[in-house]
Length: 292
Length: 320
Image (cartoon, rainbow over all chains, first blue to last red):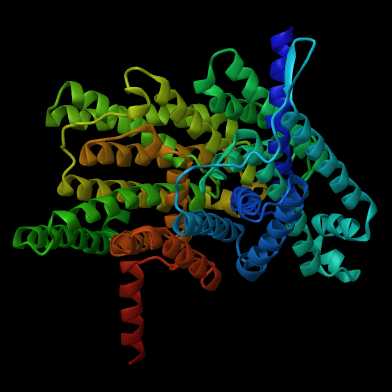
């Protein structure tokens, strides 16, 4: 029972990182139907920003987190403007290849400028372990969970309550109709990228704090896992992405804890395939009927 | 009758293939192509086999598969295991067939459930399936786990790879021009319309997928035996994406484009080796720029066709 709870805590911490990343994927996909492969690298940028500001400018945690979110938001908007906007009406596979190109670019420019070696993330918050009913939980895990939940609720409020959020939902349903009623599509899409990228930036700083190591290629695998999480949850759905993220995180820790850590990625993909076969549009996805 | 009608064009293709072979052979004999360039040529050749196969699945059947590297891994490991045990040329050819058969079985197992999905969902499911194949290989004893296999005897020399390029391309182009290929293209254009015309949508999607997987296995066999070392990490998602890049860069739905893009990328890759760490940065920028300024790929859907060349000539003759 204790081990179960312990794994639950670990899984939730990991899952909240995936969930934060998955939110960016799901929003961008919802609005322009693009698998933004560069999203995982935005998360890497966030981690590096946290690393440099904490180490050299001596930012505290909150300030590093907020500034990383801001910087990543700007990076996301710039990438969208330069690389994706010219391809708004191109075949979708072309935009996908461009996204892969952007991902390669970010990974390799960071390796080129700062070296490809792994570095230790500064421990800006001293780790304290609490033991509750035999379950060990660190203050960093609590912090990650709390920050992630706070950001997810904030995001949900932005999407559901603000004018911009309504515009985002409108564009994702029908871009042409949204334009007809006076929504500025370009600005809405930029805003979506900004929101999604800031979540990725926050995830980057949090993972740096949690795993204590960052490198320029760190975004690749979590990026793909987070996309899987978004698909499992139903791509385009914000609660789905959160749920998918937690699900993947829990699954991974569960497989690891029964001693099959070599197969943890395989388990994730197997669950993905099974879920897609049973629910072709993910858990919360709307199954759109095709009309002739 | 049909054979006779196309005889002229088929002879042209045959001459082109044989001429290409002798040109390369002479250049190697004379010493213009040294072992460094030959290595580049073989890499390009393997990439052509992979890209043409994937182009069949994505460009002609319209099924977005991101799992090509998984089937390549099956072929590579079949060859590696068999010829490491019995290093004879005969075993090498048997191993190619074994790889193809296993890849076909794997493609059926993956394809029958997942090909019901569409678009990006299919892409992500096939990617997951390929990763599962890779992780299984990574954990098996017979495949030597994550460290991979080395000292594999080299049977896949340049002529063998060249012949394999020709054979796989002929098979795929013939499939595209057959009834099945036309059915697959109809599925690509509109699944519901194709179904209402009496086309068995699922059957032709699966046929294209399986054929693509089989050629990927051939490419894998070539790679294992030419490079003599393979590891599971050679067949990860990035490899699938690299093949996808060739297909999209050349033009989705153009076999000629896949050839051109594989050759250009091979040359660019070799030329950029002097740039060291900047190599991938330049590569990424070039990729983004080509996509922005030529979204349909280098060749679009254009195909090199002797038939058209000849008919064009006769038309101009009539005019003059």
